[in-house]
Image 1 (cartoon, rainbow, N blue to C red):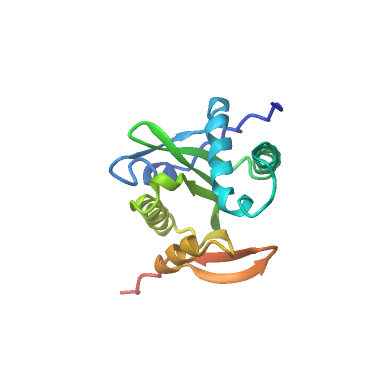
Image 2 (image 1 turned 60 degrees about the vertical axis):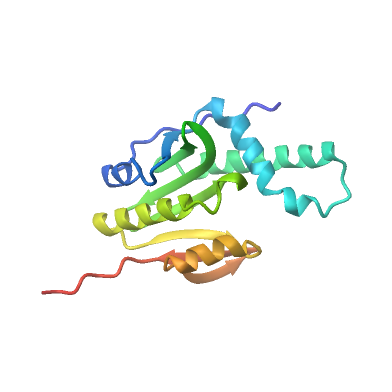
Length: 187
């Protein structure tokens, strides 16, 4: 298996670290380590199962393709987003169930990637994480949360819409979505 670059470390802003302390009753988040790569690789492959089921490829070819794509994605994420990034593993009852990758600046919190294992969906975990991030940016005065969602991912798109994200530009099979805190009325 190909050697991959380590997850970079950066100091998460206090407003963000506080928001992610306990976003959901049974969930914790930890900084991703090299030892998490096998889980993250399997999670990525699971996210591509339905798409790859449409190909005539044997299982070994599907796995090789997923491994290659995961490696490329990992290299891209760890090279493009530091120094202001967090690569987090989502745990439920101490077992890894997903990933949350974030990048921040003074004018945006970007959700680079949020992915839950299929067995952990529809439990309110994604909603709780997103609401915690919404509260955090509102409290910190960050004007926008942005993300990109695959145009075919109707389930995630509906969740984002329900939480107040608004559609932006579409590019390369992905739709940008933004959420902005509602300004409090002046007294």
